[in-house]
Amino acid sequence: MTDSQFPQQPQRRCVLVCQHRSCLRNSSAEVLAAFQAIVPHGVFASGSECMGQCASGTTVRIMPDNFWYCRIQPSDVQTIVQQHLWGARPVESLLHPRFHPPTELHWGNVQKDRL
Ligand code: FES
Image 1 (cartoon, rainbow, N blue to C red):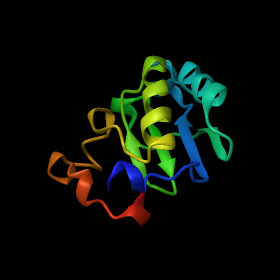
Image 2: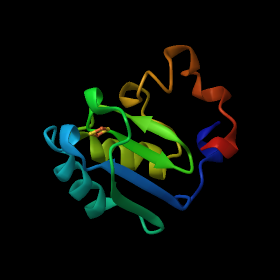
Image 3: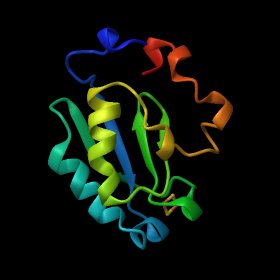
């Protein structure tokens, strides 16, 4: 995907931020508040129940893209919003390796409809 193929407006998406015990101990309430403060129009940020990735919280999942982020801190939110939600380009360094193994990280080959 080239820069000229990025959408002008962010697609409708939902950003799920785990608000269960382990993630709460890793600043997930602050992560959710940071997303809710700056997500673009048409993107909904919501707390979620445990997503089963408790050892690597704060867990963030972006739907319908189905991209998983791990160990997210409030300071990461601006980068995810700018690069993933506005730029349609996942933040490779923050993706959860269980769902996005390093061999998958060739985003130039990602189908546009997956983003
Ligand atoms: S507590 Fe957040 S993924 Fe389980």
